[in-house]
Length: 354
Ligand code: NAD
Image (cartoon, rainbow, N blue to C red; front, top):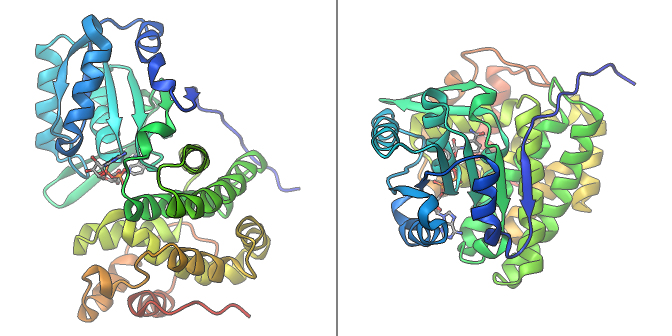
């Protein structure tokens, strides 16, 4: 067995249909009395419901969370938290909302209670990101790790099927890269494999019956495990590529992850054969890359970068950018290899693993 380092992150998780009811007592448990509720403009009405639930424990709401935490939005939210004398943030929504809470926590040191309504996983990580202009600065600080997370699958029944699928495959990507991470350890690998299994079976059931609570519970359970894995160990080629494609070509976050994942896995297949066996086993597939491609296609997701609006003439620039800053990956990253991976992802070709 290879030597490893394992470090558990401190967070409290309350999971189950109807667990939102525990919100007031969970805020009390944090020792907080004035919660600032955060949400996106699209989730304004659920933000308002949370304010009602919190009653006297609510200091107010900031409903301007948007993708990638623009610095100006973070500043406005921090300002509101200060003016309202908030002593904690309740973030309801996805990675954009949790990300905003983290930006507040980073400077104002307010504890976060997160209520995920999508499969982002950000609520389990100490990773923050703030965007200035077109550049997203990211960092790790345990200060931004939510102290409490309430996972209530009932809140995810409203998530449109297409978004459920791509967000769920994004969560599978966290599990996949945790398995071949440079920091991989046996506990995180157990978590990651179980996450893939739960997400794949949960998503297949969600597509058939989007309002089924058992299906939603399985998918959200898998998303939680993906968040734990991503928070504990470093990611690799897949995340780097998606970050580049999203940031430079403004491609949609979860959809891009969905298209790229089978190709990043195909690229890494020869360098991490045992990991690939675990992924294939979790998907009940012949190989990891083929299984991931078939899963996305069978769930009705887009499988090519061209269908997401990328243009062929951008592929060379994407390959140049993706090799600019060296980073860990099980198989060495070469310009030629990445260019060919991108070509396959652009066309939406099914990977073939011998
Ligand atoms: P998001 O938070 O932007 O949500 C997408 C849309 O779905 C929003 O309009 C949101 O209001 C809506 N939505 C969420 N739940 C819903 C529901 N149940 N019903 C209907 N609509 C719902 O998207 P995301 O993919 O969750 O997050 C993406 C962002 O999070 C990116 O900026 C990404 O970089 C970041 N992220 C960060 C980490 C981290 O560890 N720091 C991890 C994952 C993602």
